[in-house]
Image 1: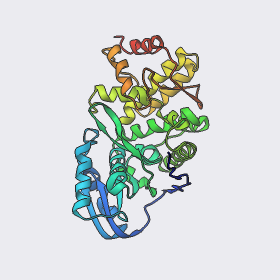
Image 2 (image 1 turned 45 degrees about the vertical axis):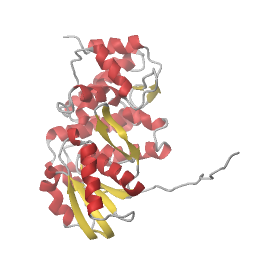
Image 3 (image 1 turned 135 degrees about the vertical axis):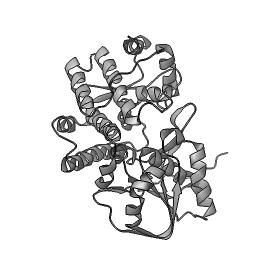
Image 4 (image 1 turned 60 degrees about the vertical axis):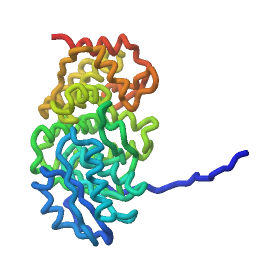
Length: 349
């Protein structure tokens, strides 16, 4: 005996990404802005001058990747319950990638899902983390292992917020641009090579190119069943680096930069990338003072940590390997010997 539940339907989750000065926004519902003390101190007054709502609240969580955890999620949820938010209420993620991921995740699980808006304030979150609906938090096993796909209702990218961004944070955002260019857009890579992103007009154009590249990929593979996984180029190695250093040594984009160099070494071992292409990528990373080296103390331990990656399954590890500049392959068929050879190279004194 069977009972069929016919749930096949098309849900339009499309949304607009506005790259410009923040417009005046009014919401006829309860709204909570989720932020951290650093962003609030720099930019909350500006945001409050642009926004109004039926009821408006501020939720502040600690600043830093180490606080991207269940305790911070609980802080957000408890505030929503205390202020009696309902399913028509809305959250605004006002900060970098950590704030965006946690706010989106809290929105996805509060009363089984409410709307949220992304207002990213770092370059990394503007070009990558705020687009595509990935939300989540970290735990003791690794980064972003708990989460949900929950698309925002809109994304507002205001370049004004970048005027106070420290140089390291700026470089971390550039790393994510390089990631997208190497995997999907050779023309964009050459644009980055030949441009000075410190020029505000050029930076705004670069943000647009990065967002468009990611949007094109997400439109084809929203929930990362295939193509979208290629945007994790550099992340498989980078997440292990973050894990080993307890998220305290490197910014996410910095770890990804090192991870891309490791992935490029893997590509060269597989004859998919030339030394010249790898050198071009490394030179672009160094142009923005991104780290490109990391000492691996224990290659076996580093390798074993790969299995905590979301993209791995059973006894196989999925690697994102560039094919030259502008193309990429996703494979779980790389031999242990090849990967250990790469890791051992980074363990040399």
